Amino acid sequence: MTVMENNDQRYLVQQNKISDGDTKPPVFAKVMRGKDGKFEGVSFIKNKEKATVMTVAQAQEAIDWATKKKPNAHEYATKIICLGQ
Image (cartoon, rainbow, N blue to C red; front, side):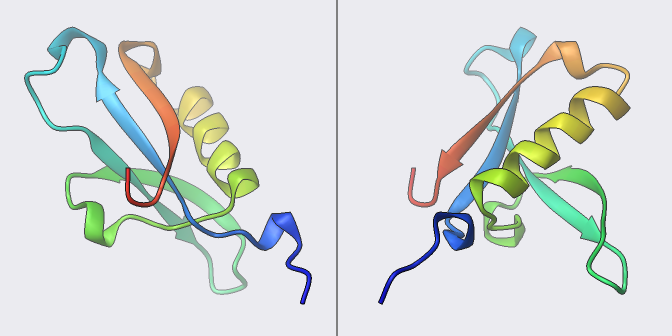
């Protein structure tokens, strides 16, 4: 069975505050979607277990949204990580 890469859901979006260095744990993206499944935005939470697991494309969409919508986005290092990292 061939799995399309865009259905490969095993990524999280992780964010670290640059000024914290390694002193504080990272936060993870929880994607908010409307009733129709349409992407509405992202909130960042400390609980990795409750973070949204997504495809690379969805993760990039979350990063793009956070970069555009969050006024202090430049203070954070945001990256896509694989589950289990």
